[in-house]
Amino acid sequence: MITLDYLITSLIIVALPGTGVIYTLALGLGRGMKASIWAAFGCTLGIVPHMAASILGLAALLHASAVAFEIVRYLGVAWLLYMAWGMWFGTGAMKVTAVETKTGIFKIIRDGILLNLLNPKLSVFFLAFLPQFVRANTLDTTAEMTLLGLIFMAMTFGVFVIYGCFAGALRSHIIERPKVMSWIGKGFSGAFVAMGAKLVLTAR
Image 1: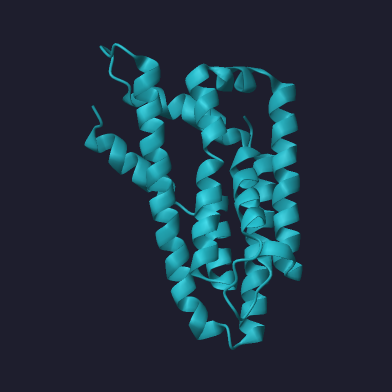
Image 2: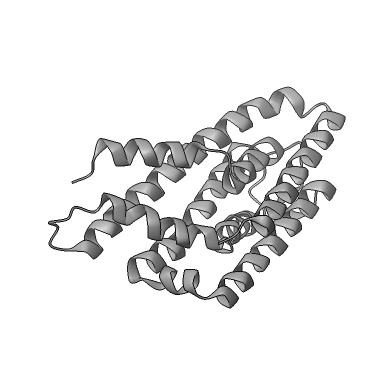
């Protein structure tokens, strides 16, 4: 049974600004609503490996192994810095254009997946989060955790799409102001650098 506590807690967690939210907002402002929806889709897909790892118990191994955790963590930092570079210089999927375009959809999705995939904290988070809401008398723990995870993913996609569409709606008001768009891009770049630094400094 899915409880109201789980839904409210998940909604709060999903709505809090993180790398996925910033990425979706950046694509909404820079490329339009359609791009932001693909970004939300990619970020949501990036949750799947972490959820699967938690359900299968692999997250516990990642948490126990300092070497494995550090490897994934620094890969994540490197990717965040790569995204910051793209935002600062306006390259690839992060490039701000005056016209909404369908080109680069694969890259948008790929970048969104990697943003979440290379964050080891997500595996540890799911390992600690999902079991709290599994009923003690459940007959199939795996099935219930899978259902909880799928609901979390659906909420992630829905909330991110709202963020992205909001950013896309604002886009028309600022796209004619190149300097404003440039500063916004640099602001998002700084946010990615800050999150990379946070990932470096945060202990397991």
